[in-house]
Image (cartoon, one colour):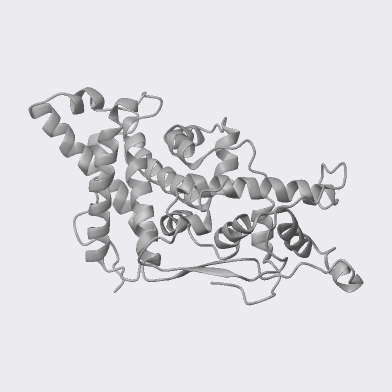
Length: 255
Length: 79
């Protein structure tokens, strides 16, 4: 069932939290006790629900059940969790942005993460190696093929990346598994996986530049590599949807 | 979702693999800067190249930045 909008009244609008005109000192109001704090908490919750609904609505096509009732439940749960996270970091708000913008991001990130987790909840992930074989060094035909950028990238992935780096890169960029979903399954963090990806990109760019595929190459790359399994290996690790895998075997957080 | 065996890496993946994401910025740092970055963009300035690089290289963070920007824009228009 596809809703046209949330069944409930429209999400709290900006009227009482006009951008550019903060209604009051949120941090002080939320840090005190008594009626002022209660009022502030109520208004903050309304903000969080508004932002969470906004994000859940944006991502609704990813949900197996996008009924209005489900969207509302997901948004409200995300808003509640985001509010707890925000209050735990209230003392870090430095006023470099409007409080409302700062608050919204907690709900948007929480809601986005919740939707992606629900989207992948019943799906097993395959943490597989690259299934494009590395060209054989003594095969002219395959060497010629490697002149194509995609093949050159595949070749470089086999030569300059570790098996773990290849699997993370394939999962995130070829199979487009969301980074937070993969992090959950591997028992690591989104930040750790992004760092792995950043290192992958650096190694590949250096290698491809050295081969003349990218600007900036100055010398042939040392094909130093980190691969400890035969090039072209298609070994895969299946990660169940219900629990995190043994991160020691997948080295999820390996930089 | 998986490509079948021995198929070339799709062009979009090649592009993503070769993206220059320096200077490095973590997802956690991106979250810390997200609100100020979005407000700066809406004000017509983009003075944080590390954020721009991170958002180009991290689909989840980019989606969240887009959502925040859209929401703040809606607020601005409704104010």
